[in-house]
Image (tube, rainbow, N blue to C red; front, side, top):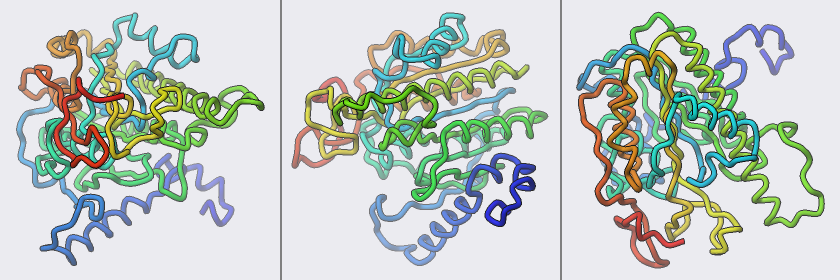
Length: 376
């Protein structure tokens, strides 16, 4: 309709029809189904074939508690770039929210790897940090929530559907390699799902953002910040654009926080990034992420939990106390924390020796790495 010029009619639809590419999810399901059929007995690497999962076969492990649970996975956000004083209004509002007791910043987390295809499936299945990328056969967090009685939504604004899974009430892919949307569109889709299902006992949503993935200047609206310095060097521009993308990400999280505040039921979100990023100012010569050698910068990520007043009144935030004083936690700790806040009867305990998967030197085979020993 939009391509035919009927813009007015297109605007009557919800955001998943108006501002996304609704056939992308179906295309990914078809591709994964055909792959599974044609190569049923083949041994294939995860980077070549992404298996199609289903949430329908998961047995209940616990009963979800009332309210709204949101798990937000950022992209390429370093642990030191979540909140920067003086960087912008988003960072300031997030800090003000934490100061009011409507959330907490947990210790930084060690991601399951320094690349999306390793870290995200491990995060969404609560795999141990030292587990290889193939160790993701256990049920996903969202499938467990669905089995426990929640209505579920899987919303993806990343260019690739890293861990496709069917069986949820809403499966929505917004961006593709050819066409990307700002993360505010994905946040609007979450808000729309919550509004449509507001009578449900419990809602659980996983949202994968485009975050701060390069190229950084494509991750925020051009008019969101002031003009760039015309005489800046390429390295300075890269740093500036990364920080602007991170500040736009803080703006997205403040919007999500305001959405929680609008709800009368207990509501919370857990935010972390899939991995970090290497920047010119690190002085290591490394760029971006997913390189052959893991670094602290591309493996350590922030951990943030936000909630509303109804959640505080229910006292559910106290379940996070075992994690709050650790020196470092892991992606697995955060995944289990999201489930614990949703009602899973598993006491939380920080990893005694946080681990990740990767390589500490060029040419060395990938394997378990101690996060405390990661090189710069």
